Image (cartoon, rainbow, N blue to C red; front, side):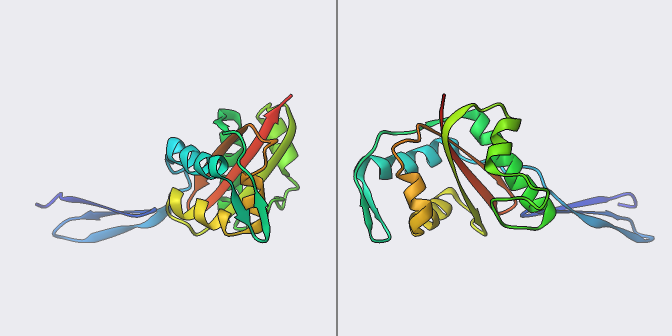
Length: 168
């Protein structure tokens, strides 16, 4: 028992401590800023179910539109933005370093004719974040925009970014 190593894991924080009968040394908590695995198929299903049935966003009714498909470049751009918001403690479409949706899509070489972005903070599941976006007129309008053919979502901590686009 003298060299017992205790490792604890809780939610997003990883705390390590070494335990022995003589002394206890606590290593400072390390915040995990890696992307959190999301359920891409569930996100697609939730978005495409709404797109297939049509919905009202605020005061505006949006009729059914075609489904979107998943795009890995849009997911990477979304993850990059969520990482930036998480690491630099801000919540906005434009980064303090001047990065915008346009520059983020250029960085991942997504050549688009049209694009849009939703962001959210504080939600812990795919269902929660989609519901929140649907309850916001502008975010809901992005989800229902028939010009968008693809989407990708990235999450780091509880920062979410959803990117939409249509390739040229």
